[in-house]
Image 1 (cartoon, rainbow, N blue to C red):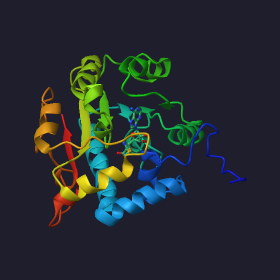
Image 2: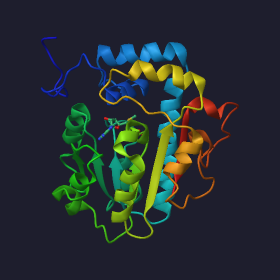
Image 3: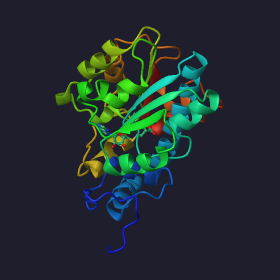
Length: 262
Ligand code: SAM
């Protein structure tokens, strides 16, 4: 590869699949490499609805974001924000109120570089290239403190993210650390791939070589993970079932992903 597009940061290994770029490919984006496409195509052989599941996750994010905006939330911390795609959090939020502030966090270099290039003219939005498993580095980052007033309610997004936090990284303790910093009236928006669906269990090993192998969890395990949050109705449900704006269809379980807002 001699001519690299300008969104390719120098430090990346494009032979190792990256979940950020795989997800970008699943959503029809162009910021991905052969290794990413091979991993996703192999997984699609055993779970053909994987791309639909990615789109359903994104649609959930938009409905939950709108819910938070309707509750008056005007600042958002988006953990594991991914490679910018259609309908980014700041675009949706600032359409409702141009004063909205958004801090994206992702440790994928392509996500960070691409976000940086599109955010230069937007003073109320930034991206931190941090590992979300180190909450102090995120919550005390000067750019987070510049944009987020932690005395006011925050919308904390962990969408399509928690399954990248394995048990050794203590996901519940991690959630508590973020929760402890949030003012009353804040909201968590979360979605989590599940082990309940055999096809998802069969697909997960195709991502084992990526930087972020998955830890799939059952609905019961996800409910335990979110037990410290007062979940709004309908609680933990498949992404397409969370306050749908159209009939969810016959097979909500094919999204392989549970969603909740608390
Ligand atoms: N939240 C977006 C959405 O739902 O559309 C993107 C989800 S994407 C499937 C998951 C993202 O989490 C990837 O971009 C990946 O790089 C990021 N990620 C995974 N583990 C992370 C970590 N420990 N710290 C920061 N980002 C992480």
